[in-house]
Length: 546
Image 1 (cartoon, rainbow, N blue to C red):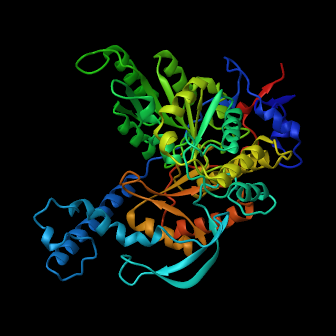
Image 2 (tube, rainbow, N blue to C red):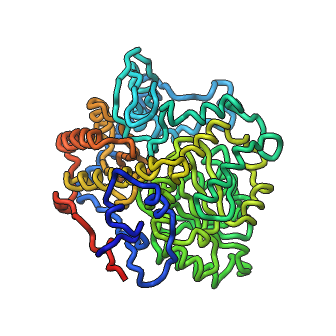
Image 3 (cartoon, rainbow, N blue to C red):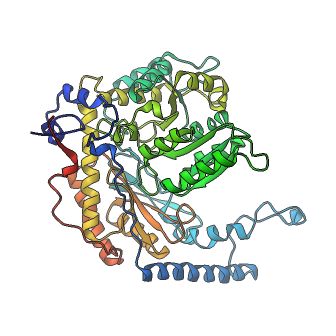
């Protein structure tokens, strides 16, 4: 009799309906990590980062070159007043001042971004659930300004929101507790938690997050971005070393820069690069003085939002222990979205949460709310309560937002008396596997891990980025397209974010349109072949009973 390591029951693992509360509780239990366990979820899975054919790379750079040449030509026409200039300019009486607007720095925005600006910042006028309504807009001056037509584009399938578990919803039954808290406390606290903004539900949420993550203590903040940028400076400073993954989020980068610590960047998910830097840091110490670093902090993300890749957590923890460093883990995109019971990458790899010194995450994705948390040992959290700028100066989290997080987290944990939360976690995992497998069969180049709800589809050429977004909207599919400088200049992409609230019918509709648009725009350039028959099982997922 074979069994799965995730929850000890093959029947429970495969069954999507009729879940029992005992099944939910089984997934909450963690096993001690040890050699020879054969647990597939603990192993790092090879990720796909297929390179484009050479002709695609050449055509991509050629496309940017042509657009740049036309940009210089249009700048010349604006300079001789043959074309109207819409960009901000210095007043005539301020010409002798140091320029406030650097003309060349805005070249990309002025001549490239403006040509495709209609594909971003689209106004919606409904709940951003699995489908939403868009306010139609048009431009009469080539995307410099927009005007609303008064028409609404209804029932556009939403493939861009981070609504991984579908908790961004407006069901009256699910939101009753949130409505009650709003009536009791109002919508704003108007004070910091260190003054008179510390409510009972804030302390309840702190305890719940710590229990959910399996750590000693936690504290929550009203803004996810500030959770990183304002807490990192409280943890490290001058004389400390930060080793940061090259694809870390801007909030991590800003926090590292504000800290005053020395920053060194290692190659993405590359353990050889990280160990080389750790060894050098330990052996050589600080520059010039060669004194030992006060602290060495490794900063990584659970899931990288532009690549869809998953951190190699087990290997990083091994290196951290070997070289006596600290680990800061940002689980903004992974908490709630991966792991048998939604507890993030620590559960996905079955590592002890105590091995991660600083656990950070946000409530803006899987929990359908706002804000973030820092969790770990009690000494760490107590220190941050008095030294963190975000704790001292940031307004306390809004009461209805706090209650929304509590509601969603209890649902995931099964504490609400239902199996709805674990059903959503499993539905998301099923949607991820299905969507990624179908895209590979079509011939798209996609990045990342098969466990990641972020699915980057490579488009490469600047002209195809705009055409893809417009074509998909014509078919009532809302997509997010991303290009330089958010990605390397030759790796523009569409980023699909899957949700447990996406039905199979919705996914099939999106895939149908992707198949058509991929043929029309010649986007199916993968040179790898994938079977149209999915594997019924993976032998690595099974082990015999002992």
